[in-house]
Image 1 (tube, rainbow, N blue to C red):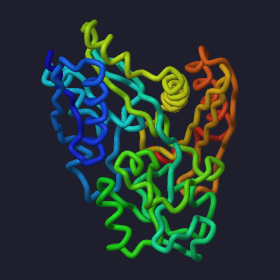
Image 2: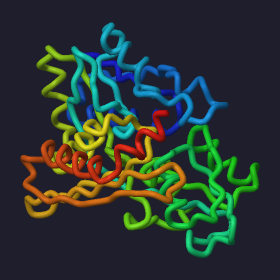
Image 3: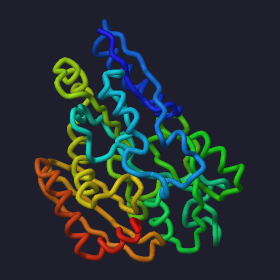
Image 4: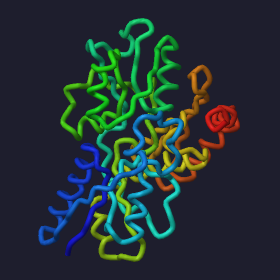
Length: 305
């Protein structure tokens, strides 16, 4: 059997697709697994802040279209980039073991967030990170930072930034853990829904591929991220809204934290609910409703307007 794995062409995306390929090869040594690079809109538009152009599917639409046309057999995504609304004919065949949900700080002078100087310049492409950084320290100058992981690490020096904030999972997958200055506590920055896990998307109707991919599914990671994605879906947000979510499964009990922020970080609503693992989706919806009713709806209007 020959299967084609679709992926974005960034070094990190290809590293993730290669991980999927190797796992499938271990399970099915007789199979042939190839990787096909697909350029998405997010890979082509690099000179505009994500907040201005990053609609739903910004990093996935072209890959999903290729999957629907049968040009690839499965797609490997960073789950945080995959919209909560999956196109008809496709579904999420596996959520891999989440390696790291934290955001991390990479600073020029090996300082943590608290130690950075007054007015420090920090690069990030995410409204979620921007708002939570400003909530923690309003004196920060948060700068738009686009590009793949290697580009952002390079821009730390080229743009004379004090630090950048990026997903810890990406650095670890690329073998760049030694660049991490601080693993930012969840008390300061809650992650994006699904951050740290890979989502493997497949077409409906192919039982054989479904069964193959299901062997890469991690039950706990799926439950946690299902709650997070349900929360985000109820809010009507994509990956570029000032919203953070974190599900944590312990001994059959699922806790879900969520936060909605104003763009400048001065306003925020945050809460946490606990329930059973089998109620993950409902838990996400309930938390979203609670935060929307507590002022989150007005904050999200600020982003949309």
